[in-house]
Length: 125
Image (cartoon, rainbow, N blue to C red; front, side):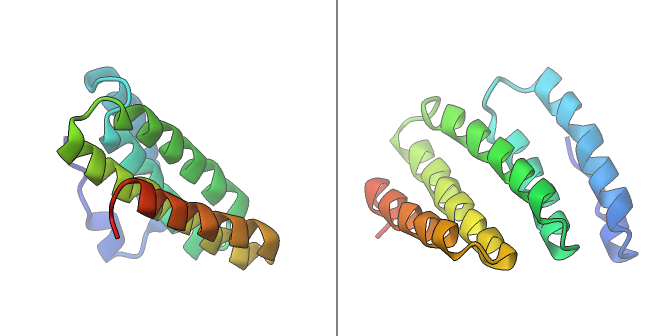
């Protein structure tokens, strides 16, 4: 399954979000539970929403991605766990950046700390 990027060329982010949202149920139907593709789609939606200043919906999609990646982590061997571990670190950093945008510095600090702990745990140092 591949999404067409044309909406990005036209800066039509409403269409991009709609395409990504329509891809989620298809991916859920065709891919195994916890497939990281579903998390990746939610990260893309979150990124678009953050760029538009829609911070709470961006956090909601990042949370969905985090949940998928946590499920994915246990599905893979050590090599795959490293890739998923990197995604988990990126999610923690994404949360921190969103909290900075929201002016919630305590939550941002905690998220950055989680990112460092995850980074160490998955051996990405």
